[in-house]
Amino acid sequence: MTVLPSTYSLRDVALAYPSRSGKVAAVHGVNLDIVRGERIGILGASGAGKSTLLRLLNATLRPTLGSVQFEGENLGRYRSRDLRKVRRRIGIVFQQPQLVPSFTSLQNALCGKLGSWSLLRSVRAIAAPSREERESAFAALDTVGLANKANVRADELSGGQQQRVAIARVLVQDPDVVLADEPFSALDPGLTEAIAGLLFGVAAQKRTLIAALHDVEVALAHCQRIVGMREGRIVFDLRAGEVTPERLRELYARPRAGAREGAA
Figure (tube, rainbow, N blue to C red):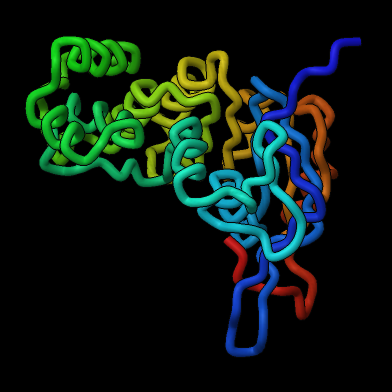
């Protein structure tokens, strides 16, 4: 039996935020292995710890306890310069596209390369991209169906078009891992399936994709594995076909009296 390499390995991970009453646990006792190339959906109610987990995977947060390993290396031991190199390999799609409103779609797509460029090159490339840079961004926009919007400002696009540009930006970045934090929450229901098809199809091709989702149907339709989180803990980690209605009811049941609050 061939053992596939792990992209992430989390062991006994906990993270607590300070509060007026002491410390509030955002995640606690998390153990998780993610194999290269997997598509994983993280489900759970608001405050379950999904977004916090993604920030740990991106190394924008460091655990209070335990270790987060990326391809065998403990991210907690990395210095800032090394973390920057790691983050070049991790693309992020947010709930809000986080585009530069005054930039065109093409310029926003080019921003996927900012982590690899110096400040001077970034300014030059965004203002006057080379032929190769322009072709790369245009190809990404074409892939998400927005080639005809390449020269349109981001603030003139619809919400669905803006999220497509955000996916094009990830394609230009060409990362090994894509993290998505509630990427469809701001979209009309009719657009969700189309954007999900792009994210889980085009953007996830040959990449590891981990998405925190509120839409159970999207997660079950597009993800291989489902991780259920409740009150900062992983309560199940199953193949999508093994997630039963009973499991979901337990996952989204109302919190116990006195349960901790504050996790993202």
